Length: 454
Image 1 (cartoon, rainbow, N blue to C red):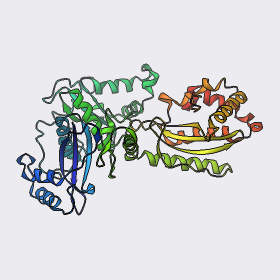
Image 2 (image 1 turned 90 degrees about the vertical axis):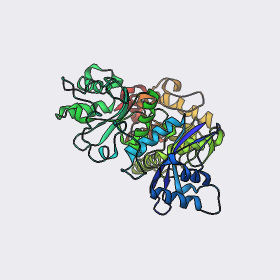
Image 3 (image 1 turned 45 degrees about the vertical axis):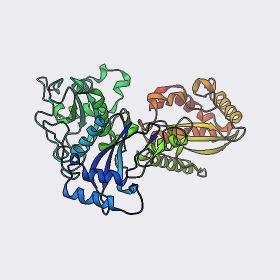
Image 4 (image 1 turned 135 degrees about the horizontal axis):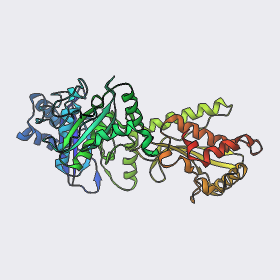
């Protein structure tokens, strides 16, 4: 069984007016199609507790002629394939209280003592809520909040800039979780290199240096007594309410694939369009998850920026494919390059819709593509004294994905991606007898991870 959270939209204005839940018995398919019978059940259910406006709008939907299924443009699925009806109800309540203006989705569920941060304290007045937000400790940091609230020891929180109220990080935790962020920010020299590179710590340190108190840069979004529920709500706020691309989070949260992206209004496979979870339909679901988060537009922007770099050097522009799922499930665009040694594909791609981190690589092209790809990189390595192609990232499937640009060194933004892709373009397209000037750059970029971060 799978549980869903959805919004009904007014027929004329398409504004959301009702948030509901629905449970499906399908184990193989993902996606919710509402029927007129479901609307009739809502109208006749005392538990729905509908307002007069909701009753009127749902009656209009139920009375539409011609089809048993509700038109897809009259509802949007916010969360899909949740583990239980209780999880769906939890997300629904957070949606009504935190995301929507008071009364916009009908009568608000009980939120006393406060379990979810009310809309007016999230989107408007972001002042502290006494008894809900953490207190200030004697040392000036955020006090531990373990077990100190009626709704439980786990909390979902946001870090924000007190100057403008802009949220830049969403997390979940318990106890001293929030205070630990500020302790690390104060002592960056003592934390590991991997931790030190996290942008949220740099932001926090800057705020502390400006004289802001930790308590002023912190707010609680939700409190629960179950860790799985805390993970679920963290992802809801991170992906749907704020949008991960506007935050410093390194991922979109656990089970990010189950939530609609912030600001996405399109029909999506696995959400309003039922699809099998595996096979070709599974790839459509995955592609829509990328597109819902706007990563297709990100790749299109990157390919245009790369073309500007290419044409600025006097070369003709290249033609990139439209964004699509390839290989092991990454979203990518590619273009064939006719190099001095033969044809090869240059690819820009995003491996995961959760992280959004970017990368570029080369792939074989054409019937003899594997042989040509291998010859090209053998010659590049020989010219620039890079060792064997395998040592710098050449794979057994004849793809070249530089080791120094993998893992934590994936490109964090378009500028970095374009710079790397343009370097690969120059190495591939420069005549072999004119590559002497590229040797030091090739060694710096392809042999050391530190150079990849510059």
